[in-house]
Amino acid sequence: MEKTPRVIVEPPDGRGLRAVSVGGRTVGSAWSPRGLRKVLGRLGHPQDTDLEDRRVIVWRGAGSGVWPDRRGRRRTAAALMTAGLVGSMILLVVVGSPDALGALTFAQRLTGSLFVLAGAVQGMAALAALDHWGKRQFRYSGAVVLIGVLITLATESLFLFVWLQEREPTPYLPSYLLLLAWSLWALFLLLREQVWTVVPHPRGFAAGVALSGLLAVTNFTYSAVYQPASAPFYIALAARFGTPRADPVRPFLHIPLTFRVENTGKVPAYIIGDNYLVQGRLAEYSASDRELKEWREAMEEGRDAELHVAQVSHRTISTGQFTGPGYWLHPGEEHTKEKIIQIPKSVEYDLLEAELDIVVMRMDRGRIDLAELQQAHPSWRKDQGRFYCEPERCSAMLIYEGEVRHNNNIINVTRNPRYVTVARFGSPEESDYECIISSYRFDPRSNPDLKELQRESEREANRYGVEQRIVSTRVPVAALSPPSGS
Image (cartoon, one colour):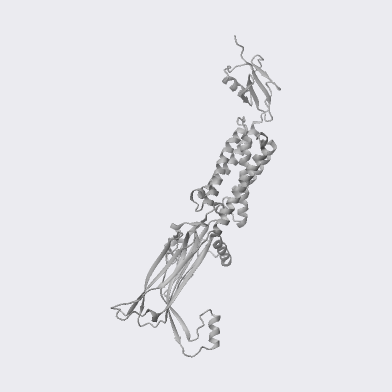
């Protein structure tokens, strides 16, 4: 009859786990007599096996009554470690997914993909934590957990560093601080256990982790700072009067006017504000030279100083929007708007002047909620909610507003939302608009600090690559006289 090999129960390790082997081969491990009986059951022994029977079980280093497992502490450490890694995983996926799936440039997509990949590593580290504080069936589970903790420490430090640039209270701030504190605790725990000693080449392991972190930081800096600043951004504007035609019935001239905007750079652009204005100039002429005093006054006031022209006035003939907020132009794309200007033949304009004024924003630095921005809110209508402003407090205006998000989502989650606000003012005499990007949402009941709002708008304009373009043209009315017989 063949002799059955005896079961060997090894001494408890530092955590209280005792390995179980048969014939020199490890077949399991146990924290308690109950766990040992489960191992014996898998080996074919009955559940009521006598654990003191030396013919069946051999105890090494300690007897059957020695089970130093601190279950509460071990399970608490495993739960805290797993919770921190899962929380870090969720945050990294939330931050990285928008850029990985929808960023405009390759570098920005790469940054987002690295964060999503880091989140996947965090998920594996969370599973490894359960094994490391369990029976450690995977030899390198502690090293995997260490990688996850180092990723958390690096990313939360980056988030906190970016947050310190603005110091705005955001919903994400408590998670940065909590996960940063957690990563320091977890790192201390893992270093005390020296989990890296099981890695064949610990120095290479450390160098690989450091290189990965350096790559992520370098790519973030490139995609968030260098690339959006280095790509050329050119928007060309043109305005041109055409050949006039006399109305055969009415005493009017019909003068064609063409405005054109072209993206001649390498970066797509939003038009977030625009206005065109056509004016007729009325002036008095004098054959004699103007006095030096009048000349100096014109220079001081920023007006044209002309030798034989005095008492200049302008009258608005036509004004309006070129496209309205929310239009965009890809590189090489252009948009043209043709107008017909009508002026009475009897009006003694000496010049016609046309001006096109637009504000554009680089699309490689931010994305705007266009559906929201393209909706006009008249300030004089009570049904417009917070956009309504009593006529005695505000002049009549159209208000456009849309949320703008930076193309690097790390910036979005480390500060408050930003909004594009465009206020358009108009009257029969003039037309103008104002455009700002800030954390302020229009509300006539609030009283913002206008100087601080202006400073913030200037900072945000530089951050998002907002620029103003203006083109103007003027033509003598005499040159627009239609040919005889027309």
